[in-house]
Image (cartoon, rainbow, N blue to C red; front, top):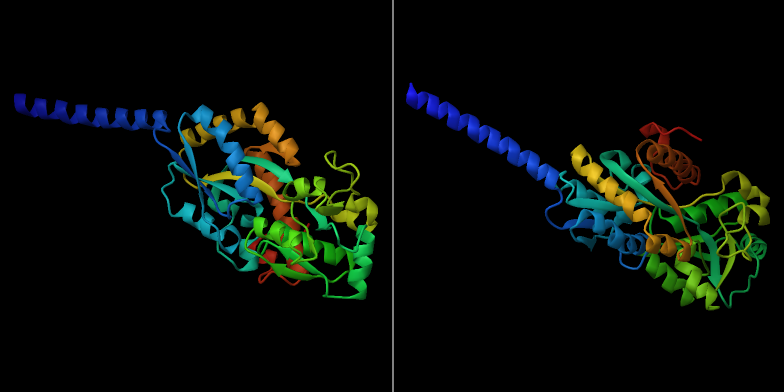
Length: 336
């Protein structure tokens, strides 16, 4: 009897010790460096945002956050990589908005619902941007020329479903001006293309162009807004310059932090807490202002309300433009 009792005591002790260790490990998260996947190349909007957000984000977590760029297929390769990793919070995703268009574009069978949100960090304002020596000084002149020479004016974009891609499609649809829309590998490559004269116009985020605009290397013909933007008050709002755009504006991309579905609640809460600390960091706020980005800071329900509305609007823009391979209705996405 004594031996049996002793064995029972040992078993109970081991079980309790394992349970205590598991709970302690969970409470101790994070105990090692966190890998942040940026599914785009270095130098683009997503990468720039991630690298500036990491410093205040890792402070509260107490461990380094290491950024890894895994570019390709408009964010699909890096996003799918995160789904191959354990749902333990040690691999997070800095996602651009393209995750919401992959299914209708036939690029990947994943979307935002395969992940869980930590925070929607910020939104961006696309611009109609041309080189400093371009013949157009107003967006109206660009539209008129594009109508006279359909398909002759080249618009560059980073990849299917990217900001420049959708902005160019939206621009063509609302203005009736047919552009020749050409893909490049990344936002940084698109910026280099417009500066090098390899494309005529780009419609990527304002933050990509602001410094070259200030240096006189680029002209901003309009912002994808209905009201002027405070950082560039002299640049016309597209909705005011061309009233046909008012119904679809404002429109723009977004950046969020996601984790794989099934990540423990305790881990997500620690990441959310650290993210809230980060978005209130003075240096981060100043960076967003310089980069002409809008702080959104949306969690949970507000996150999904914003994202679902964006997906509805954007996927139907792609479908109506004849770019989407599948109808949004196939995935239960309502027409706005």
